[in-house]
Image 1 (cartoon, rainbow, N blue to C red):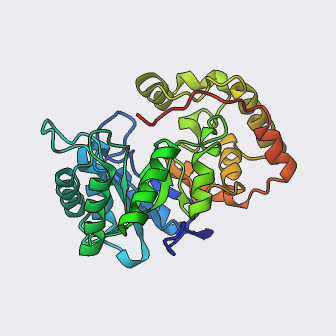
Image 2 (image 1 turned 30 degrees about the horizontal axis):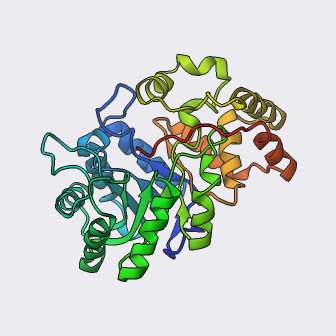
Length: 323
């Protein structure tokens, strides 16, 4: 395993973050408690020390499973991130980023995780109904109480993120130190505005869906046939293969994978590992074999010409995932 410093936090994290959305019972492709435990334990054996979950993942089941398994290990050696914003029931105050929602949901998340302090607490989306200063004051108080070490953000416009950073600086509040956003070979819109801001402000970048929910792991004509692919593209509407260059990128990933004797997924991940923007891609998987393959991808060498070859067909696409 290789490790990197996560933005300005000073925390050393594995260059692969294990995404925990697959833990629970929300969908047919998710893992139960026993299966999740086996995956987490293998991740620890492989040197992964960075785990990302959220209160909304299977309505808290993911946090509970992760907390139960990690409790059997030295918690000081793990870096745990969770998120707040999404609906957690019919109560309208169990969603959004009001002080009430943040304080209540943080308490519930810590209880499910079995932790006194979470390493990274992230806002899952931008709340248009709550002033950002209100949200940041609530998060700052959580940091001062010792319940949260660092705060992060996810999937928003660059101007919103810049506003949040400005408010933190002006009011002397805890500032967002990480950005979790959609980013992979066929969706690179974050490079235009968000990532230059992150680079300037020393914000760690932890992309979600680095494999396009499977689009970059198999020939494009086979993508529609996967259960996960149908969920991500059909139910959520993620634009993995809608760009004018997407199919050509997919074919170039196939070609490089064949040349190097590795899988398409490994090439797509290696692109992240060689990418100056990415600190640690968040790998969501339900397979121990795929997890092991991801770790092996750290050893793949992509030349500058390989990187250019993979990136060259890309054309701008409509932004996605902020609303």
